[in-house]
Amino acid sequence: MTELTPRKVDMEKITSLSRRRGFIFPSSEIYGGLSSCWDYGPLGVELKRNIKDAWWRAVVQKRDDMVGLDTSILMHPQVWEASGHVKGFADPLVECKSCHLRWRVDDLGGNNCCPDCGGELTEPRMFNLMFKTFMGPVEDKASVVYLRPETAQGMFVNFQNVLNTTRKKLPFGIAQIGKSFRNEITTGNFIFRSREFEQMEIEYFVKPGTDKEWFDYWLEERFNWYVKLGINKENLRLRQHTKDELAHYACECYDVEYLFPMGWAELEGIANRTDFDLVQHANSTGKNMEYFDEETKEHFIPYIIEPSAGVDRSALAVLCDAYDEEEEEGEIRVLLHFHPSLAPVKVAVLPLSRKEKLATLAKQIHADLRQCWSTQYDDAQSIGRRYRRQDEIGTPFCVTIDFQSLEDEQVTIRERDTMNQIRVPISELKTALAAKLSGEDLLVLPPGGKIWKIEKEA
Ligand code: GAP
Image (cartoon, rainbow, N blue to C red; front, side, top):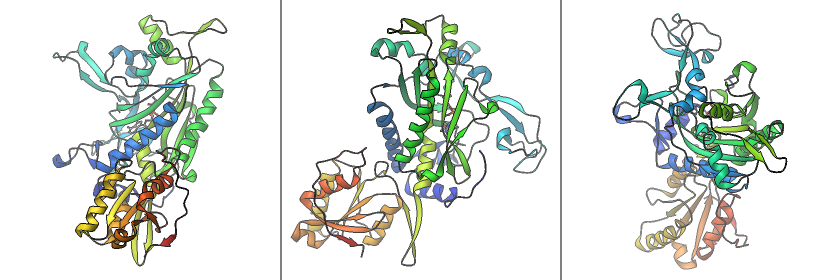
């Protein structure tokens, strides 16, 4: 983490909204919670799924040089010997001699006393971050296995399986989304650093000598992905790792950083892992990890460019970036300006009254819309309060059904950001919503091509 720059939103507001509206809860909350473990609620799970879907579409579905994998969390323990994690995946740790809290040295920002109580700190010692468990009924040294600290190794050990089954030619990549586990020394800042988290990782295999070019390509590609998701460009930057920050496997690395409420911090790391991992696994297993280039008739071990992102950190960045408060007629309107492709609920259906005739029509419309999008039906309290409830969870469009709808077969679409309202025929509602929701990443129905009248919210 570098300079601490204040942000328009504090973390307290994000955690409180997440808790209140069902995005994220502390894990095992009724037992007092479990440190740095989180549960995603009904809205959080949709947000996270939308982020993962957007990533998968961008890096696998839309490309012909990428394939996906889903490898197991538990792997042969030798994998972690060969990868260097058993020996080298450690952070320097100090302990307070008074309150016994433990701290990562790099979180102390040069301070040499306890940030909590000001007590004296111990000398740093290295602490391995991997979680250990036992495989099978006997809990001895021979049955130790690890919960993976990165998804990457599952892709390296399957390099030849992917080559043989897909006949891909270099350059090509493997992508994977999955859980990783790290026994982090200090956690906190909500879901920013937790002990169980989800990664979205790409391992891109290239011919040695072309690695620099591909490294630069992925830096740009990944930075732009966050911008396309609607994250403010001013809140994003690329930062190069200094030599002493580099992971044991990397010769070059940049972080995509986001300006979180606590300051600039890593969202994604893009590393040139060289041929380190494939060479290590070849040496450890005696298996051939080479690629045969049919054109040049050369055998070589590819270099790997690795863009590695966190799902939870992306969700946190999206929440922080979308959060906004506006004054509306003396009241504060809290809203999340989610990109439509990320919004957990795309459309809310709001009948002006619970009277049977109106409710029947509204329910029909709701049943029809939910075939296409995630929707909510809300008929409780005033229409103003219902709009505010939807604004606060980032629903881009509300469809209001009023008594006039029964006569003219038209309904109102109300937009979250502008609060503008347009009246559209029910027969064209889906087309109108599809046109409005259609970022390139959404299901697009045939456009209606009509211009409807826009009115300001009453
Ligand atoms: N395979 C390379 C690798 O794992 P990393 O920089 O250690 O690299 C990649 O992790 C990404 O995973 C980070 O940029 C971050 O988004 C996410 N991540 C890592 N540790 C995390 C933690 N304790 N909690 C939440 N996300 C984490």
